[in-house]
Length: 464
Picture (cartoon, rainbow, N blue to C red):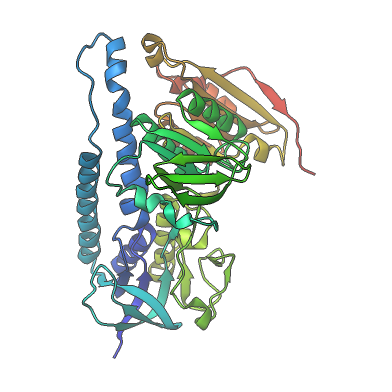
């Protein structure tokens, strides 16, 4: 007979783990099933290992920069294999933390892949986590789909010759010459990582500039920085086919007719919900364009089945999935609603000069009202002795009518740390005067956020 639970969570990523833990704390009998990674994409093949690799890349500049401040010493040489090994050890440690956390909360863990048999029953098949296990059936009053997403590959000849972000964390060697296809978060971040560690990096993307969806001034600033850092950018370009040459290198032909060779082709061409194999069609769960459709309460088209996180393809960020999981568990088993301000979800891109944003871009804000733009670019104090060319950009978008700060955007050292705090002000709907009344911390880049007094430009309302 099938084991029975109050809640079954399919997927032990950040959102699924939070949902399971909170439901168990409310007294529910909870089970969770995971096919591959405890902690999900973020912990294993996403945010966490990516940030560790960003840190590694940052150290590449330590020696040369230190000399500008009076230090002398031999140049360092990077050991890629040592980095990957240390990263693997840390991820293994985090995996154990996640499983221990679930078990401590009283959640039953199942290792395998799940497929729906009915709206209240799933079958778990063995996976790489526990290949010797037999098939098992589980029944639950409520089921949450939290399987996250997976990297997408373009539909071109030879696509199988390239790697995706999952693979990049386990490369045996750092490519000497790498072609990155795609100009989103993943492409920009790995372009910075590989470039600073010594690879020759070319990034091609279909748009005019990287990071579609971010503020245009921020995108322009990033484009200039990447070019200055030696990364070759090819906008308006898409791959047509890839082939392996006799010497082992890869030749990529572009839609513009030319070709380039590289040691590695890295597809950073987006992600898609990982719903294959769940058997959602058979039980009537509505999906649209590959994502699970939910209402505002995370309910799917089938009663008692819910979906959270990247599988819904809405705001694909770890903290959003965590918040959704917590809200859902509280609502179903705690009898109360918890609130998070998803409309002001901050976001960051961990390039070598990181970027961060919260609220509306200038273009978005101007759809509803005229906006005042406060914009500054300056060389940070650290660059003064380095004689470097990198600049910080800080931008505030202010509603011209009620003077609320509706957006904040920054590129420069510690931008994500700074914008996290500014996000509180934007969420609280504070006005530009509140920023002006705040004393800055000197000398910092962050003080510019509260010292910009002169409107750079006013953008009229563009919406109807």
